[in-house]
Image (cartoon, rainbow, N blue to C red; front, side, top):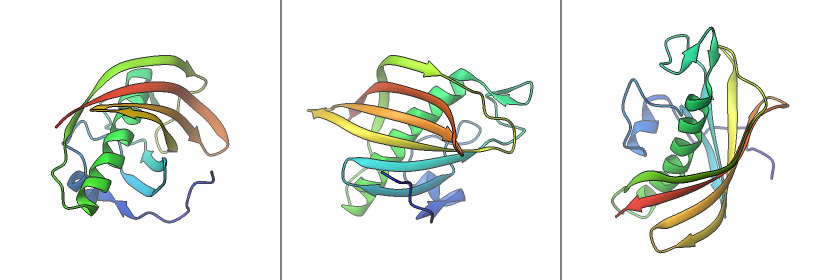
Length: 145
């Protein structure tokens, strides 16, 4: 699936959909939700707590993926006038890091829902910096409803 070009939410709007607050907000754009896919972004700021030596570190990328999942759920819940649940990373599998985005870079993440059973969702995530792959993984998220 190709990432939509226009944001449907950005900046301060993002905190309407996720439970995280500054300084740990790791998504700043929602590009869309289409079926089992969602698309989010983050521009790496110099004051990001996960930046080391001018680059977004691996824990920051993992947190970005988790918050991309939270953003999807929050957006869908808000559209359905339902409360937004808090989610927790239950497992990370097949994590591959291929590059570290620099300050000023914008990463775009595609999340694909692979399976939903009760309050547990399995996703596949791909993070890219333009055409450059950043990371891929499968992540299991537990929603505390």
